[in-house]
Image: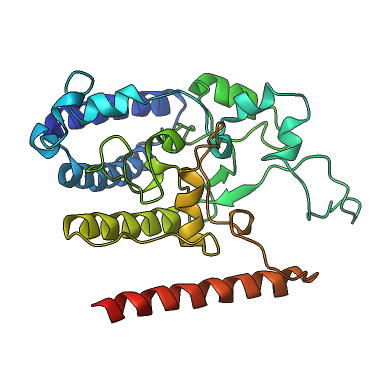
Length: 305
């Protein structure tokens, strides 16, 4: 479905009007409200430009076989048919995390590992809230890891219970973004290609690769493989000894029945045939092995041309 420019702008203006009303009720000064308005408007325009370039039309999917027409009429139908409201473990709201047990947050955003208690000089803190500076003046800070769907009034009430934040002024409240991904093990093969509709390729975080670099690597491979298909050439064979290969092998593994997005990490890459106790040395050897494999693959591609 084509991107609706006017509808998106109206929705943004309505959201912003409600947010600014709440800010005024909380006593925020007009100068700060206007500066936030300008910043958010620039962010909205950047996202709008992206969606306008990326929007689909029915013509984009006219090549889907007629046998699929009874099930799917367009890209929206395809995405809606595979949608599920599961929470991604890596971006879980704090309130959902807290429901899992009294100590859960201590092992999540409140984890105090590696921090010294200034009162005792020891690493004995029970829980720590990390504040990240948000402006150069040092007057704005955000709560790290506190993504939440709580209503604004509840956010102020609950987070003001944190020792040291009883009198904090909450300038902006948290809003969860929606990060949609498909159930790739049942839909995609190792080429980022749909099993059922081979002319459709997916790339980016929607496939279940988590992170900017990971999304870029999936786009490179998906684009390469689509070009190879259109030109009657072999697609790029992913190698589990490299991260760029291990990611598509992970997301397309049909044995993965409890699928969750995955970022680049040594856990999804094949280990070494030798035992190296030093972690840094071991990881360095795995990385160099991967680089050698990719150099050979690229050399082979150039030789074929």
